[in-house]
Amino acid sequence: MNTRKKIMVLCLAVGLGGCANMSDTERRTGTGAAIGAVGGALISSLTGGKAGVGALIGAAAGAGSGYLYDRHEKAQGN
Image 1 (cartoon, rainbow, N blue to C red):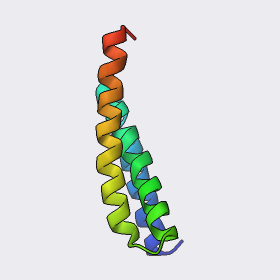
Image 2 (image 1 turned 60 degrees about the horizontal axis):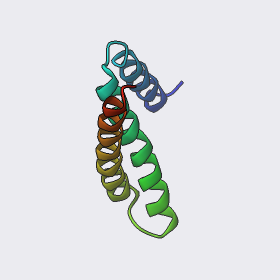
Image 3 (image 1 turned 90 degrees about the vertical axis):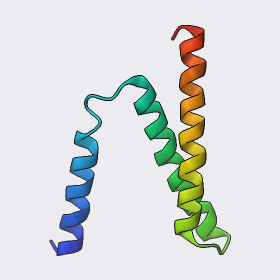
Image 4 (image 1 turned 180 degrees about the vertical axis):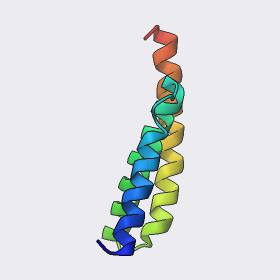
């Protein structure tokens, strides 16, 4: 396994391990950010833009959406 793959596996393991004690708000916001980043990078790269910029914009939009969803769920009593 080359060095790049080892670093990726280590980052993934640390990232997943950090999710163990998250509150619902943190989990929903983080999930929204992750989904937004992937979606933003994909859409940006498919339309000829820079994937990094798309990922940053998508992550910000996804985090905001995840937070708002959490507020909605808590207001509904879920």
